[in-house]
Length: 478
Image (cartoon, rainbow, N blue to C red; front, side, top):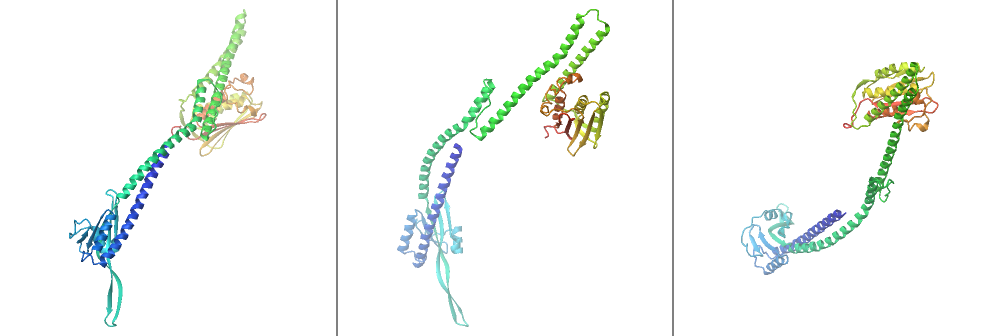
């Protein structure tokens, strides 16, 4: 605000003084030209160019020179200086481009020039005599007369602009005084207004510092301006997200502890049972050891899934991208899972709309499809079916996995990607699930800048749709 006011003052100062100077010069030039035109007429009337003894004309010339605080020279058509009000060049010959052009062009050669450095205006005014020329036709003895202008000489004058310069200096000093007062007022107003403008931001800063120090976790509120409102809304949204992350982290730690503790507890109970018994038959030992081995395998699966999630959560995680035949890769997944499907009496089919080749991390997407199809088999109805459909357009390819299972309740769809979340709290342990499969799959798909969508109504089979780009584009090249 201060700089804007300061620049405005300087601009007005310059424009006003420049406008006054131009107007004053124009007025002085017009007045001088009018005076010189009158003198030129008198020079012709008194035949001053041939007889410069006229005291009336000489006095008039001296008066004009004195009034304009300048110099007037009368030059005839031979470039001889007839009269010089300074009295130093009379009788001499002057060689001047302006004078020569004025003699040749007459009124068209009239020139006025302003020299702001030396403070004078230079003017050239032709001395014009109006005469009548007779053109007679000898045969018809008719005579016609027409007015004709003849340039007899030139008036070269200089008009001082000292008064203009003095007025400009006076106006400039007064303007500077006014400008200083205005600048001080603008500075004061700028300080007051800027203080009021910055106050909401200071309040926001204090609130953020209190939250950062742990003294408060209340949402910020500052709605005086649109800018502060947007900042507060963005910060509160970030704060809510951080709270959600904290809650998710606490819940995740609790779930991890529970999931890791359950197999250990089971193994401890089995081991204590064996220790408490004497002369236990080998068959019982074998049964107990098989149960312990099963719990160890489950513990190992949980740990491996957790390590996979940690690796995908790291910012430094990199994809090993290559061109992959999606049709062949999907067929390999189904070939590996068909024994499990036959055991569960589930029909497993693949429908491919076209040949698809895409740039993906083959291992990660292979595991994604494997996990989703395996879930569709495990959580299916008796004598059910699982159908995998491949399709593509010019940018993306899709993998659609539909099954005849019981479906997912609508209120659970928003939570299925959460770690250790289970729609059915008891069934996953029976089929060996950890509750991490969908979270791992979603992380791998997001790393490919793709999407995953689950459409389901409880009681009807769900449909999982994966959409991935055919060409992988890194974040740096996007």
